[in-house]
Image (cartoon, rainbow, N blue to C red; front, side):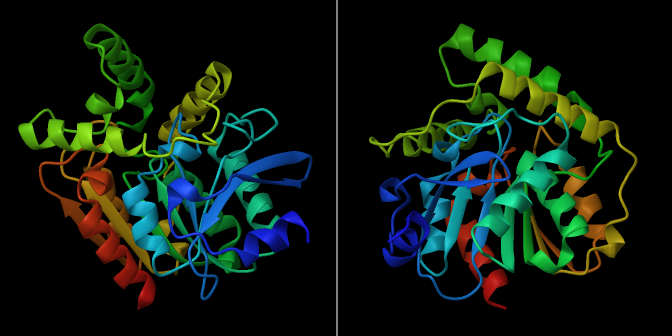
Length: 288
């Protein structure tokens, strides 16, 4: 039995127990995990700046995998995947399509968070037949307001984290209210639930290349989102510092078949703070 067949035969129900597998396509060895029932349309999760497989909130992954086949992966040059990280969102999208097709999948749903949502927007435009439905969380369109400032914000909050001995995500992803601080601590604790077979951290070069790609995305001319005919769920915290919330309102207005959900007293990581509500909304959207 080969790796791919074996991966199909075991149904894993918890992200912390999902084995890390590899698949080689177009000269890149991609690291990935999958879980949930193997029926229906699979959903591929595309993750954020500096993230590896272990940065997905297990409550979000498990909540969606309770009903469907979830696949997470490291893009080229990230975590345990080989190669060098591209400096454009477009190249990252091309690599993601290579990975999805190498799994033998002809149509998928995609959940893109933050940078992953930028990648997802390109995929649905370059390979529309590959995508059934799209979830864009914590993200913004090409040329979106404030996106070019992600580099500065990330550097500032990394320094802030060092000085306060806290994870920078506490500042970047969550509000500084009592609710936001508590949600951040709970989220960071959940990321440590997996204790074995953890992914490699992102390398400084890969992180730098991702920052360059996001900066370029922020400087691009706006794309014609009216060409995206797929149903799209847009999810956002109401006080997102990293990718300002008005970008989600803008996308929802310009996408022909979109619905928008905004979480109160929540920042960039709104879907993690409100994971129960997000999972319910996402599953209902995907079931429709």
